[in-house]
Structures are given as structure tokens and as C-alpha cells.
Picture 1: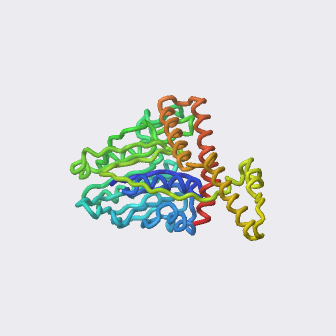
Picture 2 (picture 1 turned 120 degrees about the horizontal axis):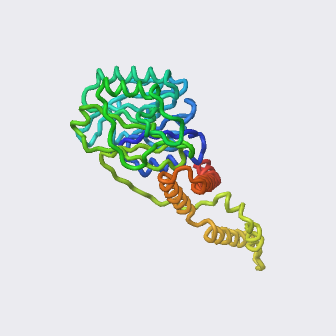
Picture 3 (picture 1 turned 90 degrees about the horizontal axis):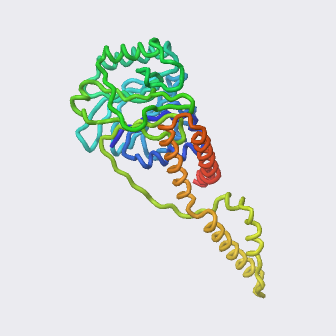
Length: 347
């Protein structure tokens, strides 16, 4: 079981929905927060049903103007009771059904200016005053804490960090130890750590060993934050279906024309039947030769993309790696859009 927060901009795109669905499937024992997804409130239910079928969720769309926050969970594993739903956070109590674990959780998405974030610090101070027991406040705060949290960008100014530091000092909130990348956001020119996992003293007293994993960003410019309490995973196979990309193959018509030949003297319907059987075999052969294991190809692209991004974390502003990352993202999007968009329509 775990808690994950991730800034994934542009979840209206079909291929990103597919990628997030795969991510959730691989982290199906987590309570997951997605922020800055840019999905309008009238489409929220449709998108969430696609990426997390059977899960319950809460959104701040009813009170939000700039931010977008979703918290999603499997009701068989968790109970989440929202207490505060604000523009820059959703706060509530998490209970793990199978364990004696209860804690406060705030999913955070700080706005981009110092002035706009003042409301966030005020609200979190209020939560601190009433929160009983362990409290985790995790997400995209959109602010650095130390000068070393930003590389190759503008120099960190005191006015950027002052309010955040004062909030942590006033409340005694602590930054969790982390493993993985040293930064959580990049545009491949600037590298910043602006996503944080903060906990109160009660959390440190009960779960001092827990660390935040900074995962690879995959289809986002932000890395997911993952706090593991305990984990498990599963997998299932899928059957073959005909996808339009097969018809787009340059040899498709040639194979069909060759298959649509029946020299028998049987009746007209039998001849059509035989031709259809020939076409079926031709399509299956074409798929086997060029498209078999498309899911495996997509997984391999994901692995390669993750490997490139891991290398980029130690070789900043490397043009060759940046170009390779862009190329792999393009290939992944092409496969996802051509195949999974049709699959979603079928479903």
C-alpha cells in the first residue's frame, strides 16, 4: 500500500490516459493524486472511469478556478473522508481497511506565484491546528526550499522560499527523506525540486522509516512521488483484435488481393467464404510479422524512455539525450494514439 502524487498536465489526450491507466494498474494498491490534469469538470467522471475503473474519487473542480486536483482510491482497500476541499489542496483522513492505519492526507498543488500561495500556507496552518495524529502533506508545491533545489535556472531568491520556510518552522512539519532523482521537474533547461512530501511530528513518531521515492516522469515533466507503506501487483493477458494500423501497412492491399483468390468451382457463397478465410489468414500473418506483441513494444518503449530519463538525471542539458527522449515520447504517442484510441472506442 502506498500514497502517490503526480502532476500530469494534459490528461485529455488519449495516449496519456492509457499511460496513466497502466501506471495505476502497476500501483493498484495506492491512493493516487493527479494534479494539473486540465480535464473539465463535466468530463471528469468519464476520464476517471477509463483510468481507474471501480475506484472512488474526489475532485476540487467545484471550488477551483486555476488548479485541478483528483484523489482516487480503491474502496476495497481505503476509506478516504474529505474534510477540506480548496483551490490548492484537498485534505482528509485516510483509513487502510485491512490495517490499523489512520492518517491525515493533504494532496497539494500550489499555484505559481508567491502571492497566490499565501492562501495555501494559511490553510495548511489551520489544518495543522486541528489535525489529530499522523499527517502527510504531499504534492506539487511549486516552490523550492533551498538554493540547491534549482539547477541551471534563475538564482533562488529569499522571497521565493521565505513563506514556505516560515510555514514549516511554525508548524514543525518535516521534509521526508527521499530516494531517486534529485529534482522533480524539468523542461530540459532548468531542473527543480518543487514536489515535496511533508509530515508532522506525530508521523515521525509512528512511521519514521518511511521515505519518498521520486520516480521517473515518463509522459510528464514532473516525477511522481511515491510513499510506500506496503505493496503488491498483478497482471492479466489480452486477446488479439484487428486494429486500423494493420490496414495502414504498405503491403496490406497486396496481401488482401492475393488472399481474395479462390480457383474452386464451388458455389458463389462457398467461394466468398473461402476468400474471407484467406483474408483472415493473411491479416493474421501480417499482424504476426509486423504487429505481434504491440503491448510488448510499448512496454519496451517505456523501459527505454525510463532508462534515458534516468541517464538524463545525471547528464543535465545533454542535447543527444534530450533529442532521444523527445523521439521516444513521439513513438510512444504514435503507437498509443493509433491503437489504444481505437480500442477505447470499441470498449
